[in-house]
Every structure is written in C-alpha cells, then in structure tokens.
Length: 331
Picture 1 (cartoon, rainbow, N blue to C red):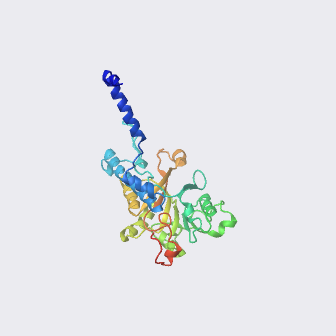
Picture 2: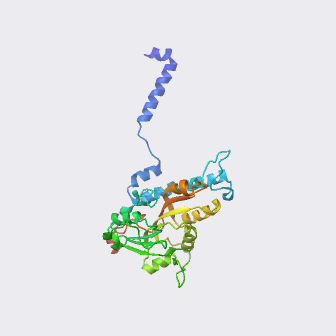
Picture 3: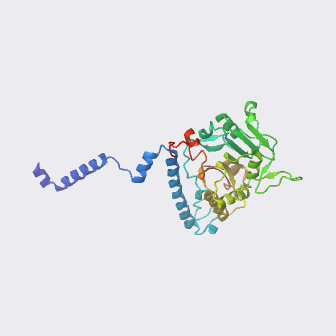
C-alpha cells in the first residue's frame, strides 16, 4: 500500500482532500453567539421582537446606501424615474420595504382586493376585554371590520367617514352592538363647531370624547390626508418621549404631489415614533384603472408600534404581577 502512495502522489492528495471535506461536513454546524441566542430564546415574545429589530436595523443601513447610490442626496431622487436609458432601476417603494417581522401570525382581514388589510396577531386581542379598534374611511365596505368582530369576543369598533352614513352591509345585526359610527373626518385640527361641514376631528380629540386611553388596531384610509393628520398627531409624542397610543396601524399611503425628500422625512418621523412596517401591498386597481400616469402612487402598509407596552410587543402581566406579588416572575 505504501508503494501506491509513493508512485501516485497526486492520487494521495486527492484522497486526503476528500477525507478532510467529508469530516468537515459531518461536524455539526456551530452557529454564532447571536444566532445561538435567538435559537435558544426564540420562543419568547421579547426575543422575537429583538430579532425583528436587528433585521430592520440592517434595512435602515441599506436604505442609506440606496439613497447615496441613486441620489446621492434625497432631493436628487424622483419617485418614479422615466422609462429611458439607463433603464429606471427603482421606484420609491424600493426604499421602504416592510422589513420588520411581525412576532405573531399575520393574516389578511376583509375582502380580497380593495377593502382588506393585513393584521399582525389578531389572536393577541381575541379575548382581550378592553379591545378597541378605530377605523377611518369606510366607503360602504366593512369586510375588514366584520372580520375583526368575528375573530374576537370583545373588540369594539369606532368607525368614521363623512362620505357615508353607516358601516357597510357586511356587518350583521348580531354583531352591530359592538360598532359605533359617526360621520366625521380625521384631520390634523379640530373643526367641528357650528357650520363646520363635514365635522373634522383629531385622533386625540376622538379618543378623549370616547373615553379611550389606547387603541389596539387603527385603520386609516383618508385619501392623502394621512400626511397632515399623522404629522400633527405624532410630533408631540416624539417631543414628549411618550409612546403612540395605538398598537398597530393599517394605512393606505397616497403619494400624490409628494417629492421623495418630503416622503422620506415623513416616513422617518413614523420610524422615530416607533412605527415599523411589517407588510405592504400595492394598490394595483388604482394603478391600472384610475391613474393616467400609470405610476404606483398608492400602497397599503401595516405597521406595528414597537414602543410602549402594547399587547402586540409585550405579554400582559400575570395576575400575580397585577397584584404586586413579591414572587411574581419578571416580565
């Protein structure tokens, strides 16, 4: 056998490489320290949220690289480049992917097509006693609201839309006692005095009127007014350091008459306030049938609020913790 190795050194090297490769593949994979942490802790909600933060932080760095590549400044970027050489390599939505992982199940509630929304963790409020839902923009279609009522035991829904006089026909009589409708509009300033038509309310004013300190699920589809409305709502919370009063947000964004720089500043305000997008869906109906420019100006986004202690990012305290038991486990 020794003679074989001496007469055929190249063959010897090939056999040695094959043996080493085989042994390497048979050795169990040793994940990095951070990967091991997530593998061990991934069953806890806190760990899943932490992992989602790490993933989203990578996205924030990638966005800055993309801006520098195609800008190099935000003011240099257009929402939808012209279709000419060099061929447009992006649209505005490529800078804002829904990169935050919802730490629960994700499901689409409501009709397929226009009217449905993506929700993170409806199971978290399925039995919640004080579940509160606000819905702005009804437009005679309430399949989304119906799915929430059907999938929960106690959720109450407050709906607002000055263009209609009630929820849509999807809500059956046996569930209507958990709905409350007013023909109001959502705005950045209150305009609901004598002669104001339609009456406009801020979100905080409506919450105060209804006696609410929190909203679990907030849906907003107000045809472009989301920029003014959310700016007015969010800035005081950023200034005070307090968390936004809702757990998640389903929002249709309308880019009409906006520049990339304006939209980037508004979006970064949402992020600073703790909102993280976990799902997005372009409005293709508008793109194909209603938009002469054929640019995808409308997109549905779903955000989770990662600040505060809402039910989607933190487990509720146990009964012992609520009583202040000295031996209660730490959250």
